[in-house]
View (cartoon, rainbow, N blue to C red):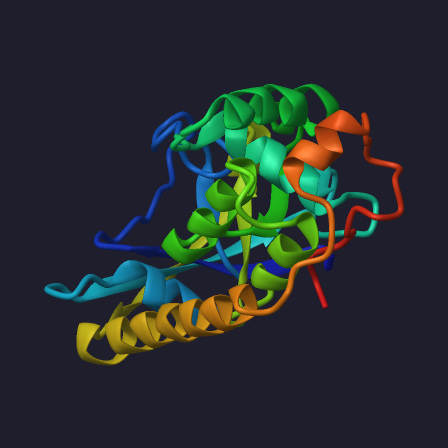
Length: 230
């Protein structure tokens, strides 16, 4: 990561001064300020079907920041799932899913709160559904890894610590037009879901969460896909 990076925060509001400690604790990586290095992606995240939004622009000095890049080969897709399970609200439909949640947290979780900055994928509605299906033993870990690459999902950068917040400099905003960016966001999601349904028609041969638990499989097992980035 470069020392100084440009990041964007998509919102229904202009945010000149991001405030440490505010926001939703049930976001992907818990409490933090969620951004992206893509202005277009920030605009997609900013709009609704009814309202325009704003892409707030910042520069961030990353020198001396403790950075967790969960998309690096040091981590597996199950690390990402475990972090989601600790922060997002999942629909746990079966006894297998209840055991799976605890198993994944116990064996794959990362304490994201000790880092200043997190780099990882954003669980949009479609992608969260794929993760939920995996936890409920509906798809294999290989299918999950493939699904997470559908629809050209973008990375997000999450500012976690008070120290990291002190490194943000506001640079202005651009209006995100709902007529352009809501269409793009919906198209991305629809395309991902179409490819996902096509994938489900194919014969699945791999590890389901039940297999992972029964085998006592951990993070060092080569069968668990690493590095969500292509």
